Image (spheres, rainbow, N blue to C red):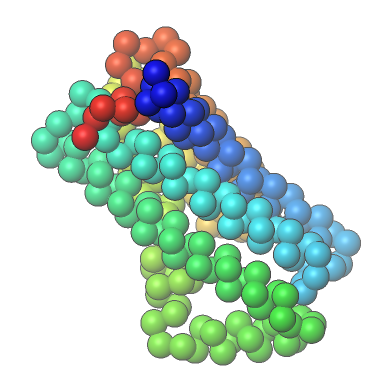
Length: 216
């Protein structure tokens, strides 16, 4: 009974992350827009609050990737493809998390916008930092999520609706176009993950997407 209760709590935490991650990302976008609207989006409260939400949002996607990496009923090469997509997403999440931590530290230490810009320039001049923290590696977070949802839409058509990959793509494109569209993009991703969250809770599905507690 104790093991079953722990398993239920773990599954509940995972399913909550399906909406918590996008919600925190949307919050980051809203706080960022508010700070810019009042002309105070630099070192200070708005910047720090926005990036705390950003970091929390990225970390909330970790259980999503972990929960979807071993879908029941998917075997062989298909399962390897799903695991590769989830692994890419996790690597990207690590890179984005490092980026968020750097942003938080710089925002806390810098006295003004000019000092912040100088600090960011010094950080980015460190060999390897740009591709690992700011350009190539962070893209794996979004591309991994898109690939994962797309694969599951093909392999588990009864569980993942065809619109989910399209919604993730729309969200990623909006975020890439402008950070001002981050909240709208996050809402698209939330709509994409919502049906998958319902299936992971075992509602209306004979075979859940998320693995059961005994799945290796």
